[in-house]
Image (cartoon, rainbow over the protein chains, first blue to last red):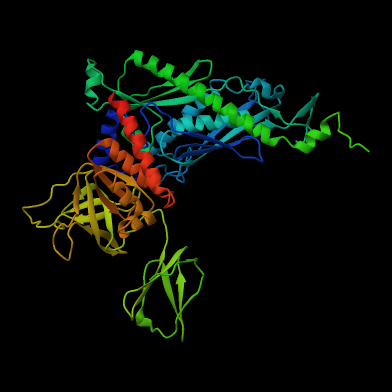
Length: 317
Length: 248
């Protein structure tokens, strides 16, 4: 069984030639993102489906009450679960779990993706954990984000980051009342559920690097003719000589930057990438807010709203 | 003449009783239930039932169905990638993550011990499925058995591969008046090889028109017949515009 994509020399040559001419297989320019489609499932809170071209990722947030860590009694728990199943592509094998983990490249790719999301969302403190604390040291909210990878056409990192952040922004946990050690959890019908407190929205932008003249040129460092490509699809991702993922928020704060190996690039280029990423991130943040607002609008129940109003229109008798 | 009807597994399709067993030929995705008097056909997958009269006495029945993974059938024209060689054979992948097929180095026109084709890993070839046997790897060949010549089979130089659905690739290959292709002909000059394994190889004079043609073919899977002309027109206009921008 072949376990990798078999990309012919013709395709490789064509993709590189096309990049040299500032065009790509789907008609985009080098620095164009694919169209991001964010869909929120209507009957739940925090269930989001993100499509980036053919790449598709779904994220579901759930919350339960648990005991906090002993060393962090004032903080809630937040866990991101990323397991890539072969459903999205046979390229990703069935994961063996912690005990029987194989050190194949497939699994390392998978680890990289989950690490990236962990670093971007959890470690950048996007979710205010202290706000999840109910009773210090004994009870707190445990928020869990489950990512499901549905189809693979490159750039899982960016798509899943958008999915997790949109889902977190959309999610609402049941309201609770704490009196002493007793906690009362209210049904969503009794009291409106409460949104999580999100401090900022970090989003990833992945750049891929190519050099049509071979990577030796970059090592010598005289004339660097490398090409920078944003949001690669599957075949472009396979052919790239190196990638860099920058995580930013709308305030232009860099939360994380990863450039693991690959093509050598100049520091000034990283700055250029950052400024460009900031532009993309601000567009994406606006899109996320727009989608959330539209969804909020749809959820308003007109009859319920009317009942809640103090002034009722009375029919003239 | 053809009759089109959607069938699902479990359907019983009665065939006229006066026909005897030998007049019925079964194509892909269909099986025959032997009964006395009438003949009942049983589809093995969802699709359109096709009935074609080969001659006055022979009728072929098959189900035209779409699937995602290509399984070799003898006689199919396919596009493959060389992924290795062993002994006198090349190993060829027709489908990512599937069992590779084999290509004999002598299955080329005029090939001999001294005069062999030189193919490297990653080369793209257009070939015909020679034999399929459940117990051994399927074999493909680059010779047309009726003439003993290449007849278009062999290594594909340059160009780009685009992937389409299997049913669509079959439709493009077997329909001489496929609308999208006749429309593209009016726009630019291109070389094309269609593999029923869902791969289409395209080569034009420049990169921009190859991308435009390929995208038109890929997208035309969702286009209605009436829209094809306008959509192709739009795609090429957009291509010209972006090409001019790139030149400036």
